[in-house]
Structure formats: C-alpha cells, structure tokens
Image (cartoon, rainbow, N blue to C red):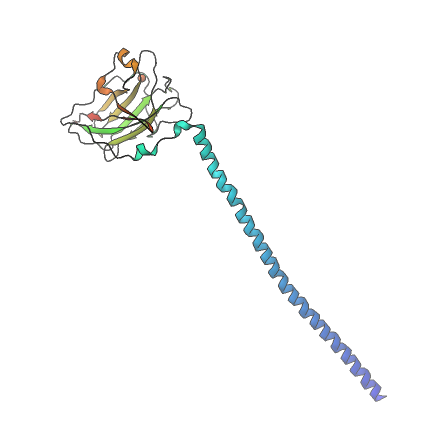
Length: 252
Ligand code: FE
C-alpha cells in the first residue's frame, strides 16, 4: 500500500516534470522564433526603403535637364557664343591726347531706372544677335573703371518698348574699363537709320549722351544726324556679329 502511494507520487512528479520540461522547450523554441522574425523583417524593410530612396532620384535628374533643353530649342536667339564673353580684351585703338566722343541728341524714348544687366536678350525679341564690347577711356587713353552706361534701342523691327524695359539696361565698366553688351541689331523707324542710344558717365563726371550706328546700313546716308565718328567696328564671325566701340570721355 505504501509503495503504491510512493509510485503514484513519483508518477505525478514525473508527469509534472515532463510537462514543465515541455513548456520550457516550447518557450525556448518560441523565443528563438521571435528573435529571428524581427531580423528578417528589418532586412526586408531596409531593402524596401533603399528602393524607395533610389527610385525617385532618376526622374528628378531627367526633369532638371528637360526645361533647359526646351528653352534653348524654343529660343535660339538666346544662345550666345561663350567665346565673346571670355575673349581677351582687344588692343585699345587710341592715340593720346584723344578727342572726346561726340554727343548726340537723347531723343524722346529714354526711360530712367533701367535694369542693371549686360544682356538685353529676351525670348521673342526680333533681331540679329549683336555682341558689342569696348572700353571707356579718358583723353589720355586710360581705361575708366566703374563708369556707368545706360543703353536703349529698338528691336529688329524698329519698335521701342515704351511701357516696359525691353532692350533697355545699364551696367558699369570693370576694373579694366571694359564693357560687354548682348543685344540685337536695331531696326529702322520713320526718319531714322539703325542706331543704339547710350549714356556714359565716369564717376563724378558729366553724362555723355550719344548714339552708335551700324556700318553699311543703307539708311545711314538718309539720316541727317548720322555721324561716321559714331559707327561701330563690326565683324561677322562664325559666332555671329561682334562689334566694338571705344568711348572717350573729356574729364574735368
Ligand atoms: Fe531712337
């Protein structure tokens, strides 16, 4: 009888032990599984995020290129040869003491407060591209730095913009006294040959108001105020028309 009770007790203990061991084993297996799952999940997440970051980068690049190409194609007149802006300054044609550049009437179409810019080119402006460069000099043929220049002119069809500032702009000469202007060959309007109006002023000196003319323009001989002294030197190059004109200012 006592042995039966002992056997029964051992069986219970054995069964409970087996159950406990099973629970522990299952628990261990379960915890191993849990630790693996997040690792796989993390890898999968990383891959997805990497693709998500790299994906949009390609379309962004192509979108940046597209508008620039479209603008250039739609407005070929805006394509300016880089050569003209980077070219070495030409030798200054000046003999001291030099005569001052003649003044000429302002005319009725000047507007103050033009924007500061070296390029007057804008989309849709008719006319043949002209790069105009030169120096502002004193009568000793010395370049004048920081001289103010204000240009205004018609487009290739002889039209002024009197409501806005198309083909109007001012700039200042650099330390070398040189200026650089991107514009178009002006057109004709009744009574006038092609001309570019300009005001030039050395620092703290009087303003010179004058006009520049285009060589070989048939209207020159019919324009009563045309002056050979104010004709630009014009070269037809592979990159387009390049003009030069040096201004000489009588300083006090
Ligand atoms: Fe005019």
